[in-house]
Amino acid sequence: MNKQFHKYLDDVLWWCPFKKLRYLIREYLNKIEDIEKENKQIINHLNIITNKIFPENKNVAVIAVDGGFADQIRMYLVAKSLEKFYNKKILFDISWYKTNGMDDSKINERRFELINIFKDIEFNLATEEQIFLSKQSNYIDFWWYFENIKASNLLENINDEQIQYMYGILALNEKFAIKNKIKIEIPNIFQLLNYTDVLTLDKYFIPILDEKNKEIYNDIINSKNTVACHIRRTDYINFPYYIDLNFNYYKNAFETIEKKINNKIKIFFFSDDLDWVNKNIIPNIKNIYDYKIVDINNNNRGYFDFYLISKCQYQIASSGNFCKVAHQFNEFNDKMLITPESIN
Image 1: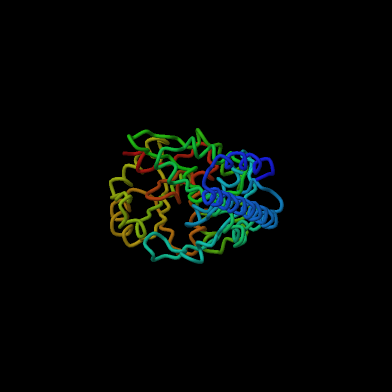
Image 2: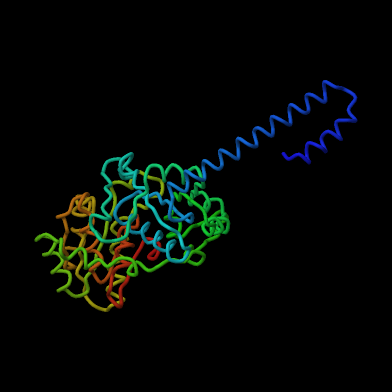
């Protein structure tokens, strides 16, 4: 408060007939002035700290990464899109893999594999200080925005040039059935790169294939009309959003592809529940289709399954996005993806 303000205050208080009241008002306003000075000092200190923690750029997004290999790729795609189209400096928070690091069933481990496979990609990790400060500055929960039909507000937030912490960015890589069954196609309101603009699988996977995976790889690329059938069950089966797919779904999928291409197919099965596949699928198809069960990669080597799925000409997906994302890297001109949504 400046001298002119105090002069006005004296002029006003002159009319007050009570000395004690005049004194109390002055004391109260002096305290406000002290608080204002302290706040300015705090803000200045925070700005200094912020400049030290984020020295290069104030338009920074710290992105929370979680989930399995396919989700890591999806998040990286969104991050690179934010970088290209929204001029964001991207940092990644992968602390979830230390504090949680499990699938939905809490049985299988989820490891951060992205930079172990794609060793030369740009992937800048946020420090603990950067994570903390970005959360305090502007925490954005993408799932909350879309569940509450605030997509336009979210895009305004994204465009703001400020330090942000982004949780749930996979919302930008999804279709949503919003309240009142209004469907929003997220890519229509948020610019996304293509997967192949960001990553090339052959460059990274071919050199690291072991002998067993090379054998499957060679079988796939040397066969005609190859179909990758991905059957995911164990970690989803007890959750409300799980779609229980029986043999009829897969039977319809096989027939749909054969009818479309007017030719016989060769099926490669990938699953986290091979006992179920052997019991419910194989007895019904063994005399009809040529097939192979890929059982050489466990949960912690699932990225090899991802690559092999992508090399097939056609894909059949079950629950989750693993097969759907692998399909995005399919280079076959007439590729086809069958999903529970597309066949029912």
